Length: 81
Image (cartoon, rainbow, N blue to C red; front, side):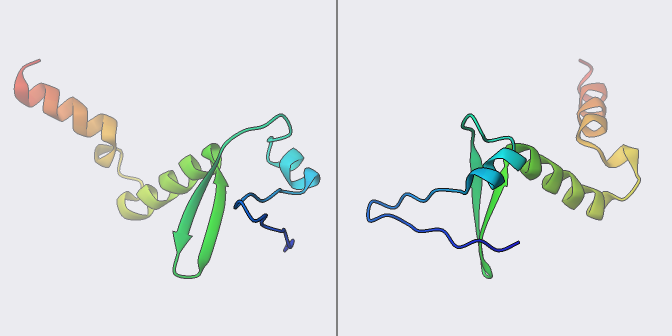
């Protein structure tokens, strides 16, 4: 879906109500703005976390030993903590 929004002279823009409602932003909320070579991407915090997890899975696959928790556990073991 593509929607045109207007940016005010002071740099504000308003997301249409139906989009805010679908994203769970009806009562306010936060969006993360990512600038890419293709343009700007707006994501909710939950969407950003899911995106980061998908990127991590792309590089680690189904290797549980490649997780951050496994790394920290190995570091604790190595340090004797």
